[in-house]
Image (tube, rainbow, N blue to C red):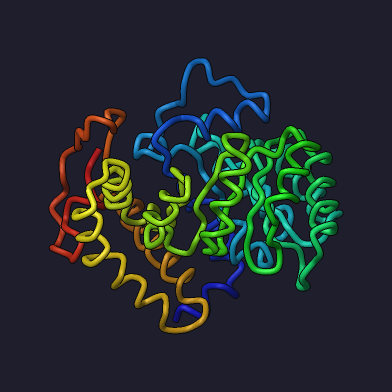
Length: 324
């Protein structure tokens, strides 16, 4: 069942338009970074939408991950435009990749339909030397007026000196996302770059690694499970930032480790499990049985909305489904 998701383009387009990784942050800094880079005003603050009200600072559209290769340019643009309409002034960060010219072309096209930033995924197929990565990323940054976040993973791993060189050359390089899990390299980068870049944890199921990344200087990460258990995602993040280690461990053991076991069953399951959960959440919304919004604008005070009675689950019946 899971294997079919990555090959169904119709599902790809629907999911790209309806789901996003949420960037969970303790401040509006990442929101402001992308808005400043794209020239958008943040003076009036974010518009209240289901996405921002649930506690997400920024929306990463899902076209970067498995469906970058499954959607046409027009479908990708349509998904980006739909997300922008849905989330108001919450910045939309769209993905691009492949070779340099294609990456620049994608960035230009999504910028025209309202994207606020770019997440640059690894280039096509082969490893590259640091000089090649430098030229590739520099060309992308110079080809767009939006803020750019580079994604360190797989065949595209920037070393600290290369990243520092790019920061000197490219003022719109505003973010660094890590998916390597190499804490030594991550700490070297945060020590060298200071606050020049917004650092974002990007490991699969980022909550599993959040404590280690927090120790390395990352206060922000992208949460995939926010798509279908947003309340639990926020609860974990607040416990993490409050230093409530016992609560973090309880949530990890109760939900995230069992969820990880599903993702480890076969290649592709880690992503497909998130998409399956997202579709289930979308169906609940469409049937009006519940809405995937858990905390209102008074997020910091923890004020919750009225709970919809749902069957008990391992993560509680009030963490993912509540009525506005």
